Amino acid sequence: MPITSSAKKALRQSITHKKQNTLRREAYKDAVKNYKKLLDAKKSDEAKAALVQVYKTLDKAAKTNAISRQKASRLKSRLSIKLAPPAPRTPSSA
Image 1 (tube, one colour):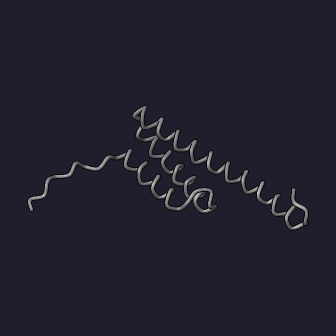
Image 2 (spheres, rainbow, N blue to C red; image 1 turned 120 degrees about the vertical axis):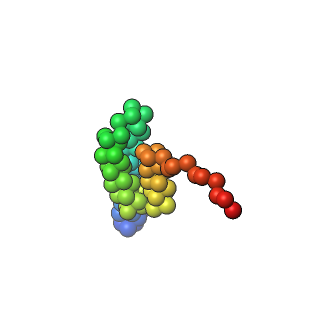
Image 3 (cartoon, rainbow, N blue to C red; image 1 turned 180 degrees about the vertical axis):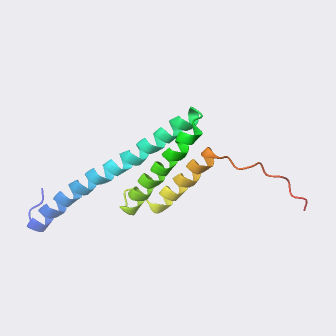
């Protein structure tokens, strides 16, 4: 247990930050699950709207350091590719 008043405050802050980070992580995970369910159900219009929500929650989680900015970027990239897969590559004539 903390003894000094500053250590007590640091403990309170740590507990608060942990709760907030957990909520933000759960929010982005729920948004991603919802998005993937819509993709599996072939509801592309609803999935596009859900992708906006996914971006919002990922950006908020990255902004508050609940997850790293690189992880948010990586997830956004991978999830957007699932909505509209890229066209197949043509072999180069080199």
